[in-house]
Image (cartoon, rainbow, N blue to C red):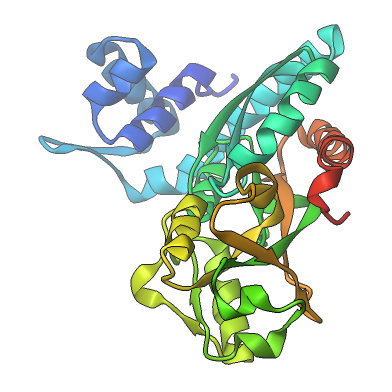
Length: 310
C-alpha cells in the first residue's frame, strides 16, 4: 500500500503560514477561509506524523520539525513551479512571471535600458521587480520569495549561482568650487584627509569605501551616511564632503551644470561588479543563463556611452 503524500496545496499553505506567522493573515493572502487553512495544516501534520506549527493566541510559530522541513517544502514548490514554467516555455517559448530583486542603487538607472529589449525578445516574459537592500534581497532569494536578483557584489553565498554581467566604474564627485575640481588630473594621494560620503552600512559599497579610505588616508563621514545615491549627490552640493558615484547613476542623473564636477582618479581602478544571481537548484537555471547573456548584450548596445567594462 502506497504511503499517503502531502499535496502541493498543503505545502503552499504551510510555507505561507510560516512566512505570515498568523492563520488569519495567511488565509487572507491565500484567499481562503481560516478554517480551510487550519484543516489543511492539520492534514499535513497528520500525513507527516509531525507537529509543524505551535499554535497560540499570539499567532503561529514553527516547531523545530517545522523549521527543519520549511526549506524542503520551499524547494518542492520551486521545482513544481519550475516544471510548469518549463512546460510553458516548451509550448510557447520563454515567458511567465518571474520575481526579480534589484538594489535601489542599480535598478532605476539600468532597468529602463534593458527591459524593453527583454520584452522584445521574450514577449510573454513578465518581471515582477522588487527593490530592497542587498542583504534583504539575498535572504528573499534564498527563501524563495524571489526567483533571481540583479545586484552588485560581494555576493558569494554557496547556495547561489552568479553570472557576471559587467563592471561599472565609480567616479569621484566634488563640489564645483572644491580645490580638487580645479586640478586637471586627480591622483589617489590627493584624497588624503578628505571627507568621503558613503551609503549606509547595509549597502555593499560601504565596505568598499571603508577599505579605500583606509588605504588612501581619507575619512568616512560616519555621521552623514546617505540612504540613497541622490542623498549623496545633494550632500556633496552642500559641501559636506566628497563621494564616489557609479557611472550608470552619473549617466542618468548628473548633467552639467549642477554644482558638481565628475573626476576619474589616476592609477585607481575603482568599480563595482554586477551579477545576476539565482538558487543553485533552480529548475529555470538554464533560462537564467540565457537571460544574463541577453542583459549583457543589451547593456553593451544601449549603454556604451556610460563606459562600462565587460
